[in-house]
Amino acid sequence: MVRWEPGAAERLHRAALDLFVEQGFAETTVPQITARAGLTTRTFFRHFADKREVLFAGEDELPAVVARVFAEAAPGLSPLDVVVEGLADVVAPRFDGLHGYLTTRQRIVESDEGLRERELRKLSVLREAALRGFRDRGLAEVEAVLAAHVSVTLFDVSLSRWLEEDAGRTLAAVVRDTGEAFRSVTGSAPATGTA
Amino acid sequence: MVRWEPGAAERLHRAALDLFVEQGFAETTVPQITARAGLTTRTFFRHFADKREVLFAGEDELPAVVARVFAEAAPGLSPLDVVVEGLADVVAPRFDGLHGYLTTRQRIVESDEGLRERELRKLSVLREAALRGFRDRGLAEVEAVLAAHVSVTLFDVSLSRWLEEDAGRTLAAVVRDTGEAFRSVTGSAPATGTA
DNA sequence: GAGGCTGATGACACGGTGTGTCGTCAAGTA
DNA sequence: TACTTGACGACACACCGTGTCATCAGCCTC
Image 1 (cartoon, rainbow over the protein chains, first blue to last red):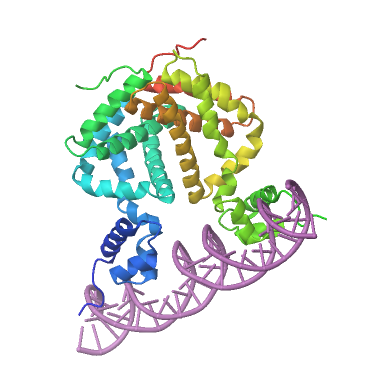
Image 2: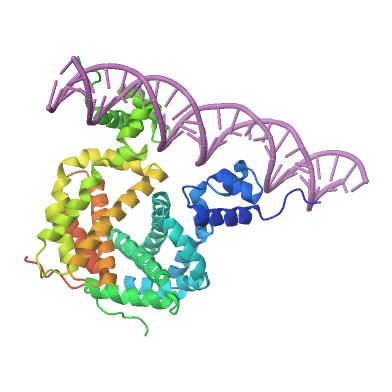
């Protein structure tokens, strides 16, 4: 006989999400989550650093994905091309099946200041990964920093736009579209990519 | 005879900053701060929403400054020129006398994850102010969003660079320099401003 | 298969955060 | 003098997050 039901982390995750949707994030306490999952409060904090972290589980792998973007980028591309092509080809496909989940998740995050803070911090971790990538490509420090900011901007804006759309387009398509809008608003030269 | 010494908020602010420098942010408790300021714990939370907010007091006025940037921007300028000129002429002068204070403040913020989260959230409030400004200038939604992101990037990067420098340059000079670097890394057309 | 090890969980205590509520009292106002 | 307004003290309290130790199923080893 098993002493505990398996999959504690996943049960906590589902219980937490259900409660966040039912009654709001701030109004949900950790004891409520663990009661629904059949565990103790202490166990919750063994799986998640804090209450907010439930909504960001599994995002730890994204920096590695960013690293792969730079590993696979052609040598001659401009910084902007690296970002747009990398986001569209490497990053975006990882999100395509998650439109539904990410939409409800987004609604929860936007309902709470603390969650928005955490989300911005997660994006800044991605920015640091991109910064390393641009440094390795030989960009000067200031330019690498700026390129990293632009990368995260394009990712963030593209994801937001994609989630606002009911369905239809892929995230990759939105990324390319957002990239064009970026070139337009900054007066940048058109893509030099291997179109 | 006065019942309480005046300037409770400022006393709390000074006591908190001193303690943060002496023993670190996380290691400092609110009761420690209020004891040093000669007040009670409850009173601390009447002046600051939470412990972190001590380090962001007085920044509530920045969105209004951003609004002024757009109110004073010449009609024909490109989005990038609006940002660079506005930051250099309107925003930067407000910081010039604060290099010393902002440096120690920055050191504290960088020492704590929670503080970095809060700082990013404050920047995103500025971004929303810039977004309204670009919308009012008639930019399409996507382009306004991207321009707002770029604005905050230039502000954030410029401020960081300025604080890293010992002294010498004004923040406005760093802003213009960062703007040039941005044009370089994104392949943008040079400034069309009233040089 | 007996013993030992490991890893996840329960149980308990505890300091710190942030809020609700009520009482107190100086200062301003009529 | 009487009333009102703030700012603060005092107290209680729920929740957050952590440290610590006991427990016990499953696995490994000999």
